[in-house]
Every structure is written in C-alpha cells, then in structure tokens.
Image (cartoon, rainbow, N blue to C red; front, top):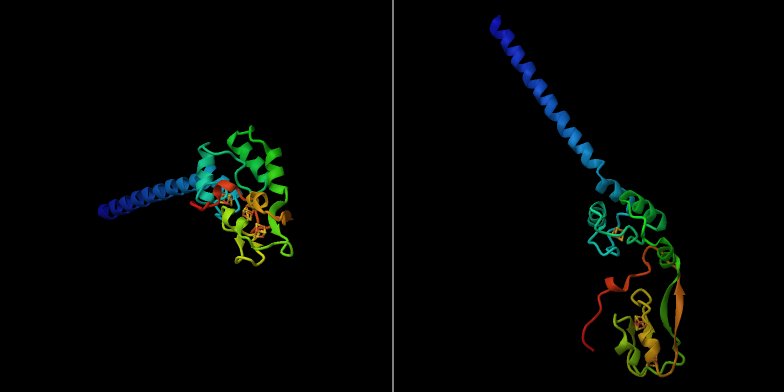
Length: 187
Ligand code: SF4
Ligand code: SF4
Ligand code: SF4
C-alpha cells in the first residue's frame, strides 16, 4: 500500500513538473509571437520584393526592431504603415511628406516616337539597364517595365524623339529605387 502511494505521489510530481515545463515553453512562444519584430513583420506586406534594401520582409522587420533601419523604406506598404512603424520604433524623424510624394507620384518612363526614330542606336548604347530594344536603322522601343527614367536616352537622342510618359503604380510597377536596380557595367 505504501509503495502504491509513493508511486502515485512520484507520478503526480512528474506530471506537475511536465505541466510547468509546457507552460513555460508556451509563455516563451507567446513572447516570441508578440515580440516587436513579429508585430512589425505582421504590418509588412510579406511580398519580399527587396525594395527596402533588405532581403525580405523578415529581415527588414528585424532591422526595424533593432532600430537599424528607417521606418519609411517599404514602398508597397504605403505611407500609413510607414507612420505606424515609425511610432512603434520611436522614430518620428522620417520625412513622410517626401515619402508620400515618392509613393504616389506617377512613375515616369521613356517613350520613343517611332515615326521620328532613325534607328541610330545611340539611346540603346547609353541606357544603363538595357531597357531599349531595336536593330540598327529600325525604330527602337523602350520596355517600360525595365526603364528607370534616368533620362540618359533623352539627352542622347539626336532626333529628339524620346519623351517621358507617366505610368500609374500597381503592384508590379513601384517607384523603383535606382540603387536597387542592377546597373550593367562597361559600355
Ligand atoms: S519593401 Fe516591403 S514588401 Fe518589399 S521586402 Fe521590404 S518590407 Fe517586404
Ligand atoms: S530613361 Fe534611362 S532607363 Fe529609361 S530607356 Fe532611357 S536610358 Fe534607359
Ligand atoms: S537615339 Fe533616337 S533616333 Fe537613335 S535609335 Fe534612339 S530613339 Fe531612335
């Protein structure tokens, strides 16, 4: 009888210990879930486009939680989220006016008037991101998905047949940060 009581007491103690351990682990998980980094990440769009200069939303959230990044770097998230992020990390110095202008101003890209284009190819050679296609002596064309609106082709064209046109933003046409675009090297 005494042995049975001892066994039950030991079993109860083990179960109590296990319960305490599980409760501790659950508290740790809750803490992680509610950490600043996690709460910041939940505000970000999660599309991992890299426009903020970090390799994905998690990395940007981590940098923000450590106060190593400005809160207005995620353009897809928009100005309201940027302001919320600024409030969360105590950064009220970021300029949201400039940011909103950047966010909502239409994207400008080059457009070639093919009737006036002689196909000399000077614009194509000058374009830093290979956005211009065309063969010599034939009208050239700009790919608006690639053009970063740098004006190099406009300044180069001897026929003055390139102008800037406006594109509305959508999820695939952000106002790209020129520093995040891979620039080709050499001529
Ligand atoms: S710019 Fe925004 S959506 Fe894109 S990776 Fe950075 S945090 Fe994510
Ligand atoms: S504006 Fe710049 S990026 Fe766009 S087509 Fe002209 S040279 Fe290329
Ligand atoms: S520089 Fe002007 S004329 Fe020459 S290919 Fe380009 S758009 Fe045409």
